[in-house]
Amino acid sequence: TMASPDDLKFQEFEEATDLLLADPGASTLSMSGSSSTFPAGATGDIKLDMSDDEGQEESSELLRGEKQTSGFWTFEYYQSFFNVDTMQVLDRVKGSVMPLPGRHFIKHTLQSSPDLYGPFWICVTLVFSLAISGNLSTFLNSLGSPHYHYRPQFHRVTIAAVVIFLYAWLVPLGVWGFLTWRQREERQQSGYSFLETVCVYGYSLFIYIPTSVLWILPFEWLRWLLILVAMVISGSVLVLTFWPVVRDDTKVTAFATVATIVVLHALLSIGCKMYFFQTATHTPVPTLAPNHTAAVLTNKTH
Amino acid sequence: IPPSHLFAGLSDVSISGDIAVEGEINVPVGTPSQDKKYSTLDEPVKDTILRDLKAVGKKFVHVMYPKKSSALLRDWDLWGPLLLCVTLALMLQGGSVDSKEDRGPQFAEVFVIIWFGSVIITLNSKLLGGTISFFQSLCVLGYCIMPLTVAMVVCRLVLLGGSWGFSFIVRLIVVTASFSWSTFASTAFLADCQPPNRKALVVYPVFLFYFVIGWMILTFSPSA
Image (cartoon, rainbow over all chains, first blue to last red; front, side, top):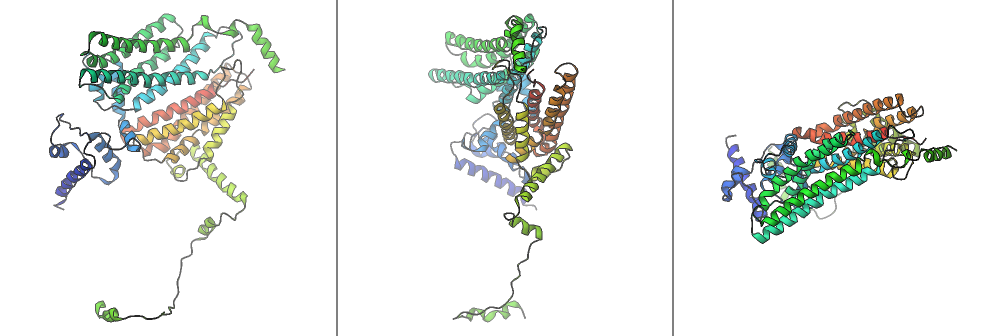
């Protein structure tokens, strides 16, 4: 009927009013970037999809406009962190492997809407790629020895999982905590939320997935070269992200912060390489004591 | 006569005592199968077990020929996944025990990976906006492990004839084929429940899940 478009507009305004009345403290993010007055903001920014079967879409649109209207015990709160499409995730991954000085990861690629999908699944994939590639490289190393018995080494999955997930959560927590503390001291405004920090760290780990697969090739010079390349790429993503925040601080603090970030990253990659991809000289017992292994095997068959 | 005139005087009627009412009340009796549903408590145990087994078996057939039927989703149950998971975990036992540290996955590790992995994938698909229910998704993911369990049985048989060379190639082919079958079957059931531009985001964890299980099966090496 003739009245329906106007009715819909009126409803839109009312629903937005209700939401803000319910939670006046909610931060309203307007696309224009200025904290415009509420009526102008509402009709422009909050897009309500009035079709019946898109109730879910509606709530996620609203959440993008007003962050965290639900408490942390509701499902919708966590759903707001998974509000990404396939193309967005692919773009973010691309942004993490091609760090250009002009493209700031958080402002440019994430556009200040961090997600937890990328970091979580990149960490899981990295855990398994480290364990599987490490297992394969140990196997290839010991192919030559006569009494080698293939061992699946499943405990490596557990160790890799603990190391990677601790790194991906504790280090961002430390970095974010430190930066927030400095921010309060220096009265600066620009800082990142905890989620954005976790997001940057998670996506920066992506480059290690192909690196760990390539580490299977048994050339030491190649492995060190790969570490160097991966560290440069993912280290520069981190440095480019955090430098603008620390730059306004005292020189010493700024350099110390950036240096710590880089050193921790280096420790992770070198540690992973040394533990999971041991060189031929470190291969343990069976190749050094074939008689012992043969004796044990014959004992077992009896 | 218009109805208003017919009942015009009723408002003045007052009833002092009980009035006997006569008539017939007809309750429609349900179909015989509905009657049986209410009395399953009295049926012999054999019937109950056979009915459940038939339901489980029907779902196995659906996994073997994955068409877009909704039977797996509608009548979900977790017996099939439990059965498959226990079978797989038991068959992955008895691996080589050269040293305590380098052996393959233990029963508990396989169990945790399968169930924890299924829960995480289900949560992931729900967080991304999927419309499937929690247990339906667990049911689908569990039933689609069946090709991999079959591959495990085949691998153990092939391993009786030696570990390397031809046997390895056969095992590789069998595990790869069954892992792709599992992934394809589960996406056939799950894909319709996702928002269209996030399908790949939901399929990738499923792929990773079956890849890891396939890896555990392929790397199983029995004690010499």
